Length: 180
Image (cartoon, rainbow, N blue to C red; front, side):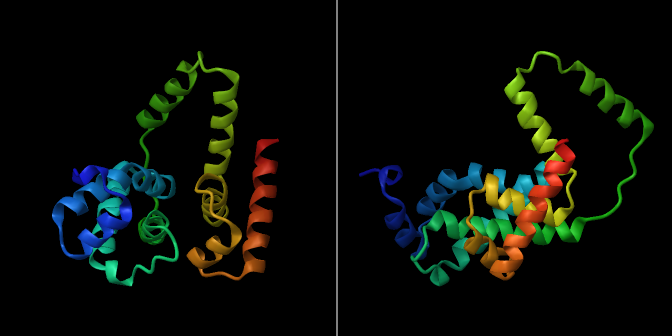
C-alpha cells in the first residue's frame, strides 16, 4: 500500500517513529489549510508561510503530547492559530506608506468592475471585518471563518465562556455598524 493512501492515524504513528515520508505526507495534506489560517490572522504571505512551517515543526516535535481526543487537524490548527496570534501581536507596528503606494491602491480599487454582486458583498464584509479592532476581527475569524464553537474559542484565547460570548456579540454589533 502506498504511503499516500494511508489514513492519518497510521501516518501519525509513523511520524512518532521519525518517518520523514510520513511527515511529508502529513505536511502535504494540511499545508494549504494551515497557511490560509495563518494568513487570515497575520495578513502577510511570507509571515504566514513561516508560521505554518514553524507550526509543523512544533507539531512533529511535540507529537507525544497529542492526545487523540481531537483530530490531528484541529490540534495542528490550534498550534497555527496560537502562533499566528502571537506573531501578529509581536509584529504590530506602524508602517510608513508612500504617496505612490496610496495612488496605486486607489487605481486598483477603480479597476474592479466585473465582479458579481455576491462577490462584492462578501468582499465588503471581509473589508469591514479587517477594519474591526484586532480582538473583534480575530474572534469573528475563529468563529465564522475557522468554524470554532464558543468552547474551542475559549480554550484557544484562554478566556471565559461569558467573555467569549460578550466579545462575539460586541464584534458582531461592531461589524453591523461598519456594514451600514
